[in-house]
Length: 115
Image 1 (cartoon, rainbow, N blue to C red):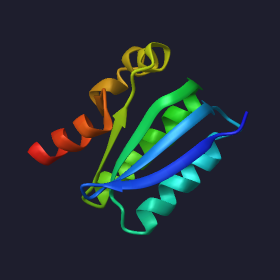
Image 2 (cartoon, one colour):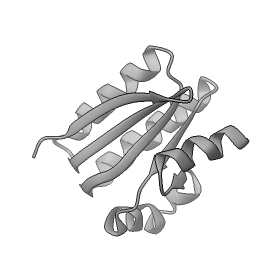
Image 3 (cartoon, one colour):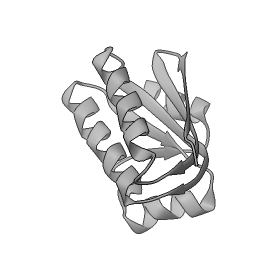
Image 4 (tube, one colour):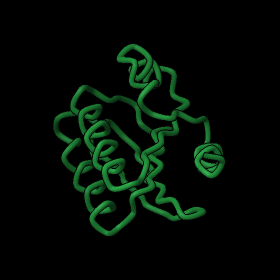
């Protein structure tokens, strides 16, 4: 299955909307897109996972790696996720404590603005 990646800007944040399955075959595309955003100076990123139907450990590795890199550069990576199956992966792995996981893009951007 293909992965659809769309980027837009909102309130100084780059919003990457992801649709499809993120697995060993598609994770490299996600990594490339996120690294390109960071390389272009977009260190505050919201990854919208609401249209993701599946993700595996490869996807988690990509997200954690980008989170570390963004923080090293003074930025942040936030997630939007309402899909119960996908959100459960973050809860089981306790990555919901590493990432700020919001219900909407507006909430993710607003919570970032309060900090």
